[in-house]
Length: 358
Ligand SMILES: [Zn+2]
Image (cartoon, rainbow, N blue to C red; front, side, top):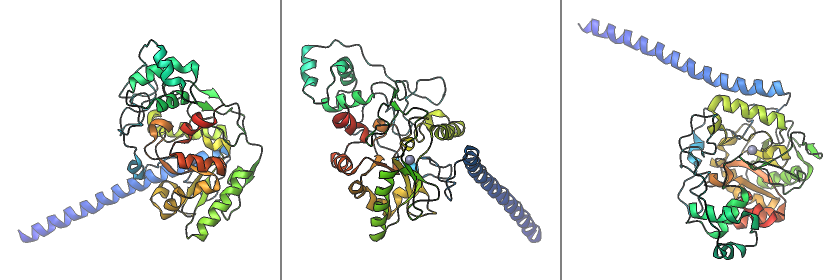
């Protein structure tokens, strides 16, 4: 009996080891498939990101679970109950559309309202008030009674009273260093910044390009970070319209459109096409989507405005930006504006419609 028992245990152990090997092979296979897809995607587009083949997008890879740590929490006074925000854990349900069955909540439509003179008096004192939007201000306020009148006007001016991508304007000032590029404002398919420069390898992985002023500001940022004991490297910068479109489609195929929209921009709406955005890592072989957990980020979040950069997609602002928190995505806007945005505590979308929109 004892011998038989040992024999059975040996057999079970063998089976277990074989099963474990098979499982481990499957996991490797999945990883390789994913990375190979990315590499294939790159090479088929003829764009080299040098050593950064796995660092292509503002995209949590399938192996990454850290992004869930940055999932914005709802329930702040700023979070509208309307469009972008349906739940804290689900992707913003922007599209009551056909393309995805993942949508669990329909977007509430704005209530029909009658505008009174008291309503006009309420909103018209705000410096960024737009008379043409008064009906939407009143309706949006009714749907979001806890929002301040300033936030109501700000949100409607951004376009948040309508679903993301539902009304997309073509950007008329693409060369402006202050350009607002988001899910309501898209760059032309043919837009390529005229002053792109290939970045110095001391500060960026091979082949990265940014607009000249942004690149030089980044060098200073990176050098000063290094002097302070931190590493901040540029790993993904300018992307063409067509490249972004193919990247986005790859993620839609993998994760579905609703989820892809929380981390990847549709062609024309990526800040990377402006040549003013940079995804960074805390070292050449570090993963960009772990940057938020590094000491380099702790330095960055309270210093990059001194070099003209802002954290474009801050934590807890998904209802406004339409994107999960991206600690690694910096946007160049110039020192004066970057300092003002930092001091304001606003997202760039909010800051722009309040203080920069013409
Ligand atoms: Zn980015």
